[in-house]
Amino acid sequence: MEKILDPILSALAAAITLFLATIIKTLGDQLIQLIKVKIEATDQKLKASKFNEAYETGKKIFFAIEEKYRITENIENLAKSKADLFDKMLLENCPYLTKDELIQIRQAIAGEYNKGKAMLYEDSLKQQATQLVEENEKLKLLNAETENKLAAVKSLNESL
Image (cartoon, rainbow, N blue to C red; front, side):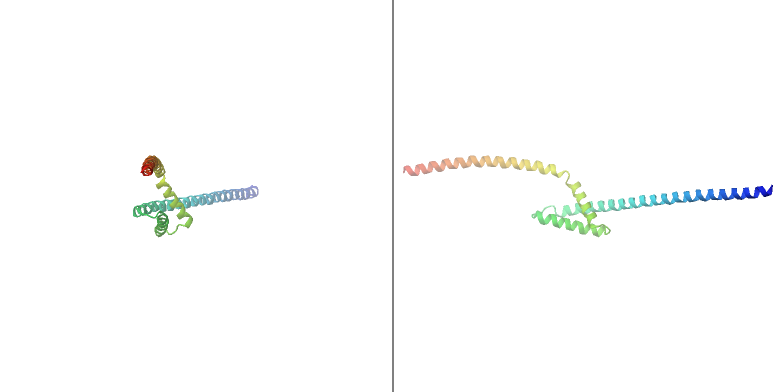
């Protein structure tokens, strides 16, 4: 009986060992995949966190610059100097940003800041256009009156 059981038990032990090795390998592969996914998710969170930190810092810098340059006469130089100052200050606070990320953050903040201003500017422009039309009409009337007076003076001069 021992002669029959030895090969059967050996084969059974080999099969169990092979089965356990396969399960361990499969679990190990799945664990490696899980770790890779977790690492990627952590990297994404870290990148998002850095971007949010840079964005919030950028907003603070943007509003500080807006306050500094609130009143200026030369708009062309103003826009360039404000953008340059913003880039410089944000890079000082977040040196890991690339030029593209810097531009993206600046545009996002400027868009957020200016989103309500378009309506104000449109209303202001409409009001200014209406005022210009009214002033133009007044000037046309004044011009017609002046031409009539000039014609009267000319006719008076001719009669003398």
